[in-house]
Image (cartoon, rainbow, N blue to C red; front, side, top):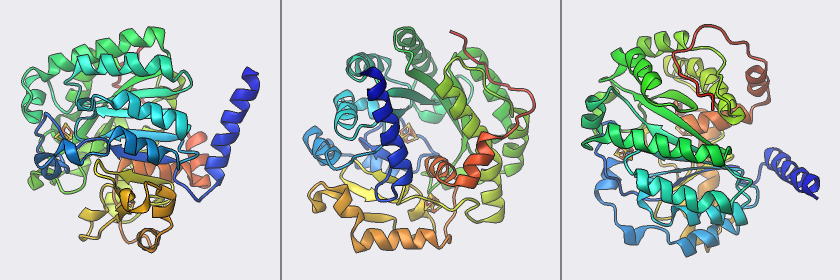
Length: 373
Ligand code: SF4
Ligand code: SF4
């Protein structure tokens, strides 16, 4: 019986890979509320106007999930997702109705008690799901707290990591990661920041993203790609986390560093982007976009409509003329960016890139501390 069950799971995943009609990855901004005020944030203007009454309710989210067979993976973001008290139940809707099995929750790590509560609630209810808690961390100690404008943030992040690590001993499907966003202000210190993270926070994997979109403080986008290149050349080695999932994620992240540099240097999509087809973005108010960053590209709108106007059916929304025209625009390859979620999907659904990724040889030495639990 157990074998049949896991066969059905893999068949579902294979069908989702081959079927082009519905996205398999959704980025869900569960809330626009946030307790941080980061200068590199592209969502700050929305955060300033955030109103809980405008957020999709749990009931509305339930209706959306019933129309989404084969949504393999979700990234929950915001705002700060752990400010939503029903976060666990949101994930349960996706788990039960959409059969989602991979959840990444991006957090600033400032709410350890909420992280504990949500994970304790959801983990026993969703035994087949994998969870990745992805904590943003961009500088050393107090400099990081000031950057995010949350006093004592580093200590709170330490507590969050400890809570996740404690839960991992009981729930091996739980993993943790740290993400540093490189911008003008921390680019010269990347190696030192990563060495600091390595010695301070025992997480499974980490990565460095590039500032993107229209940041609240535009000057922060003045980055020098030399720093990114130097750092990525140093860390290219196989990851040794005890978690298989984390090792695969680390492999993908490392594979994509040079791709991101090429995208920005050559100013084009290096791998045809599948945003709007394989991956979509659902905003807290029900707006659906092809991606997070198209709006910042020549002011072109990536909005495909609001799910409420389509009876909470994403299938209906994605079949609309508006959605089709956004996808057609993206297919032309005029826009380009380093948005990681879209890039992961574009690599995964491109057979030649996927083969290169699978057979890639690694080299060098890692700055990353790997956890052996
Ligand atoms: S924590 Fe994230 S969502 Fe909140 S302001 Fe900073 S970058 Fe934006
Ligand atoms: S290349 Fe970037 S901006 Fe263009 S659709 Fe893909 S994710 Fe959006």
